[in-house]
Amino acid sequence: MQNIDNYKFAGKKAIVRVDFNVPLDENGNITDDTRIRGALPTLKKILADGGALIIMSHMGKPKGKVNPKMSLKQIVPAVSAALGVDVQFAEDCAKAADQAAALQPGQVLLLENLRFYPEEEGKPVGIDKEDPNYDAAKKEMKERQKEFAKTLASYADCYVNDAFGTAHRRHASTAVIADYFDADNKMLGYLMEKEVNAVNNILNNIKRPFTAIMGGSKVSTKIGIIENLMEKVDNLILCGGMTYTFAKAMGGKIGQSICEDDKLDLALDIIKKAKEKGVNLVLGSDCIAADAFSNDANTQVCPANAIPDGWEGLDAGPETRKAFAEAILPAKTILWNGPAGVFEFDNFTGGSRAIADAIVEATANGAFSLVGGGDSVACINKFGLADKVSYVSTGGGALLEAIEGKVLPGVAAIEGK
Ligand code: AMP
Image (cartoon, rainbow, N blue to C red; front, top):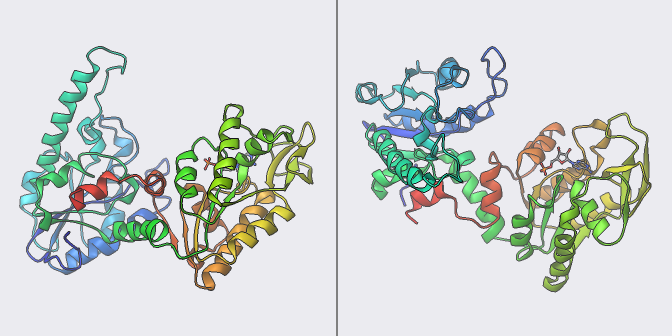
């Protein structure tokens, strides 16, 4: 497999898929440029080596139609400032051949939002899945997707994928395009390499004990990961809103706490599997219950299986926090995905904070810790502890699918698998 450090970019044009799907305010100003900064090491390396850059990305969900509110033109000044180069812009990403051909070493061309073309995602538009012609439409769109990818590929000598956030999608720019470059001329960017290595550390290079912490509101959205982790971890902490589905399944009273009533059997099954596999399953024993879903609600500490009517568990209780720390502190590999409470409310951050503090301490003692998935990243940032864990992933869905053990199409396309 080709490697970005070994590749000779001098005199070459590189087409680089990045994730510049940055949040904008109503005036089109970038409110968080983390994603742009994330791609800079790759982009700067190519320019410093004497290459020319064709940068491509999606922004938002324009669903295959041109939408000025999601135009990447809005971010040209920010990308120019970040790279220290006046970035040129291609208004139509499928008709940029002349602009790409004219690029000189050190120059940069940013293509318009790829998702203005339905071919990028490759899903047929304007036809229902139930429609008898849907399969034919899908087949036709797949052919158009190949043509679109081929056009993008024709702009450059090599392809670099640095968009981990979309690596779980088989889109024209994230995977299909790789078919039009031979193995020596396609590679992962630095951000992708870091993400892939971090996941490999968690799944394939485990130093024990391995503690995974899965939180968030629902068990149903995390079940694939929980099942995959069950095969690997020593300690599995399940926390956040999903705990109450377990408490109810075991016959507890959970008041008004969030619960998936159709997942009670699933919860019992997870408990059984953990026993069979010798996994130490840590479920909260107590909680901070509130009399309303509000930061200012009245609170009381109560057993997680005896919450009075009219009250709901919004955070982990003191005993539970201790149990979390006991499972985290001795760990040598740690994965955290999902908060232990409604961390958006300042009065219900304690459980998540206890987890974060224990992870920071374990990391200082030599553990490898990966924090990933939107809300846990928001948590660790809120606590100002992001630089005290081993790795904070930029990937939401991509990270979760990778941890589930799925092969990411964006990575597979480069690795030729
Ligand atoms: P998820 O989207 O499933 O990863 O869950 C993240 C969300 O779960 C966050 O917005 C939290 O506020 C929410 N959450 C965590 N604990 C609870 C709880 N005990 N009750 C309700 N929501 C919760």
